[in-house]
Image (cartoon, rainbow, N blue to C red; front, side, top):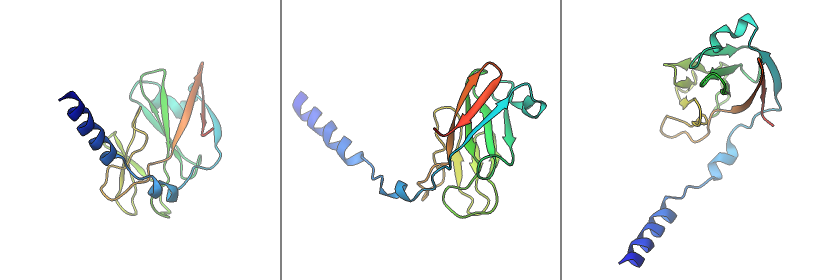
Amino acid sequence: MIKKALLFITFLTILSCSNNENLQNCIQSLPLSITADLNNPELISALVPGGFVELNNRGEKGILLINVNGNEFVAYDKRCPASDCNQPMTFERGIVLKCQCDNSEYGVGFGIGGQPQTNGFVCPAIEYRVIKNGTVLRITNF
């Protein structure tokens, strides 16, 4: 009985594997390495857990910087990942980036990785690595 159950679970696991071919067509991030000091008044909204700030004129279309818990931060490029949209994505409801050209939405936050929240879209929003050293944040993709 245990062998049958294990075989059944293995079969379901194989069926649920996804194909990554569509991800090869996704927009890749450009080299990025910027620093931002939390003492800068521009970042005052990002000082508290759950706070965020939009860094315009950085990255491809601007960067959304979110304070996760006071010590950890996540950052996303506001460039629409699925289309050649000239407008930056907007941060809505405190949980998604929305592309204004095709109304696609992407989840943001710690561990979410910019995954698409709209059916039919496979490319995630571009997430950057954020390293905190004292009051200085380094936002990078390498």
